[in-house]
Image 1: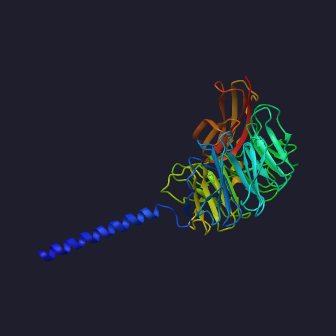
Image 2: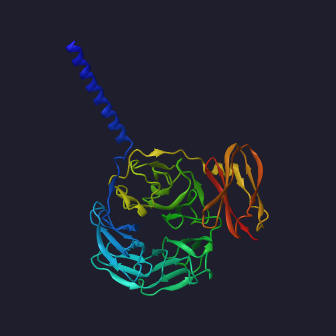
Image 3: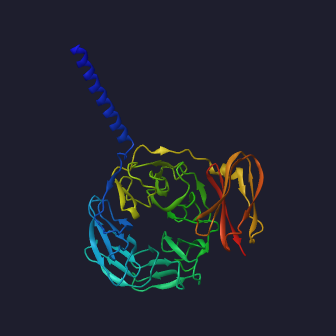
Length: 442
């Protein structure tokens, strides 16, 4: 009797140990992958990170917006982000210096741009020089230590500004000449070639920002080029260009989201590219391709922390990189190239997709209230037609159903919308086939 009780007690203990190990291993498996770990920022009294840059594997800088105490910060790390220290603390009771961008020119020179001042260091943040400009930029692109471009979308003085003396003086070199429609984002690949995004669409320059021309039907929330012809961008889908941005080909993303907000690319080489910005509640993915985007895989570094979307990624080589949701002051770091177990997503041959589906220009166009959208499909597929405003925000799903081969037409009613430019996109089985522009005039 005593022996049976003893055996029963031992079995109870063994079962408890097995269950403990099971739940512990389950929790570990569902948590952060071994390739990434979280890093922490100091107490910023309510300020949040707005921009980051890294000079090398150890040295990086970050800037914040203004908190309720009208304090803004420049932060610096010298150990790869494991520790961030306040490099410069601004307390400006009579001003608001919220930072919009920090970027490096070389291993010593860093520019930080606020609404009304520019900050420059040439010795890795030991000293900062302040230049007043009252520019209120929304985005900035640094070409070299002398040439900088900035954009602002609103007001009578919106447009593209350029400095050729390191930010001491600025000149308005391009504007739409109206109170809206000017760019709020700018990306320059080199001193001549670049792109901007505004409510009037995506535009390209080939002469350093003096002139811009529209890329019809395209927009971006993140963009990066590896040479003057080859680049990637995304807003409603991932796209690649091989002719300098004149034409873009959709690349199918993994089954998380085809909607990207504040996305960010980090290009290692023509094959290996990292991307963040896809929205997924509590489980934000990090995308990666090793064949130039023919196939995109993903990983979820940390499912224990509810992150719906990252908006910053930077790799300085194939192993060392950072990912951040800056408005939450949340950052993770890898020294081994991320998680080795990338979940691969099978892609569709885009040339076949484009042959099997066709989107026609709406008619009439321009139109007053109603217009017809015609499209053709050569195989059965889940078809969606979505409507976007000029800022790229989805305003309506006009169609979402499986359809067989044939020619179709659907009517768009813009009775409750204001006059302006809108875009409509055709999707087949989750792949965006084409986007076209239409003009509503009332």
